[in-house]
Amino acid sequence: MDTEFMAFDVWSNADGNVAAVLATKQFVDDQDAPYGFERHEIRIDAPNKRAALKGYREERNKMEKVL
Image (cartoon, rainbow, N blue to C red; front, top):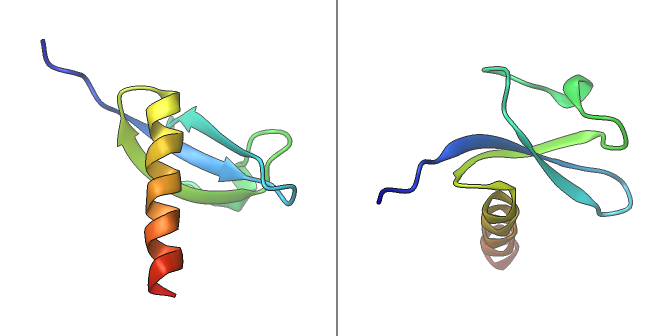
């Protein structure tokens, strides 16, 4: 059985909280943030919200190692 991937937008706030929300628009910016969040971090394809957040953290860790 194949896993179906969906697009999720990952949002963050100043407290370091992150949330994955199923993408509903083709393009988003920080003005589209859901209540309680203020910054668009990444759009990622994943089978569910948990996997989207895991993917975001992996990408963030890769970028921190480069910098």
